[in-house]
Length: 530
Image (cartoon, rainbow, N blue to C red):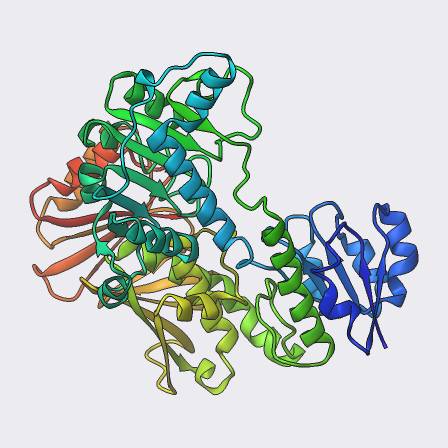
């Protein structure tokens, strides 16, 4: 018999698969302190939690029989993943259980926004029969812009199409073929901002998406549009939105999330007559709470029975001998993927990895997972992508992953080359481990360089002409951007070249634009590898 401890409140229906299993004993014991958990966990094969229980290394070390920890939800901040990995304990979550409930909440907010439902309700119950103040709009024949076409965004799009809306969508992984099947017109963020009657955001919060809708976007929006955010606070600049509403650019907004939660009592959203707010209710339905528990229960059962499982969020155990050889390359592979994603424009179609030298003789699947993690995390956020689920997420988004191996040394004992193909271009990087120096990027496309993949990097493609380096350095210096290191790679004298600079802080956008405008400069791209 397997023993499963449930230490947080989880619905009986969600646990039904476990409680009805003939080979499982389920014990519900909630509200335990760390000391109390340490005292009892040794007798259990699995632990199920929500967000209340903090699963520490001390608890896991006491759980000598623990095979799996299940989180009935998405976030795993309350679980020490590093400790779980080192102890060989699989941690799983339920990322799909909230899809429909968040989608429906988004649609409820959109309809409430279109018809002024909260405002009209408030006046009516106060005894005012006011029909003139709440002239709404139909969704039919309106254009909905969906920023982020993952699980939730695509479900919102399906329902919008059923309401007779035209859907424009943006997503860095959505292909034209898949968008066409869904009835979505792919567009850039700028095209959506300029043409949509309603905009809803469904992206993770990353450096790239933070304030992706701010003053510059509000300035070009269609007058009278409406905006909804049931994803993450911070994707839309809150103060810029209030200004846009007060200026008559945006007719109204509906937010389920805030940059800081809970918001301060004086937050302008809370008393603005044209803004609808709810307290992060996207996942708050009976069905969603049951679904995440059902999903986790199923995976826990599979792990206990040694059957295939999904949604693991930590690295499964690797044989010690192989781990010793691969571990130095984990960070390098992650950084190569992350850097390449920032260098490349367009929807990702294929990731090609080539291992040469001694690595070609090893099982490099863990390294490939880190590379794919690096690529996807730039677009999806570090919270959603890890080295275990990265291949699954790539498959979900129709990103083809190709692995090639070669025993040729290419001048290095080991070399990892990553190529990223999108709808508009293909770019590649090569990296290795140098004794005494650690991780290094040694090629940017065909150009030889020697760069530590860390900090803030400026990649400047240019023609190899006298004076280029001086002009770049002078411009950065005049704008208080300090250069820490510089590398120049070229293949031919006077031909194309690459300049890579390590800088102490991010360069302002206007400085990057000035750099790109210099004579002989072809392209400037800032890379954040902090």
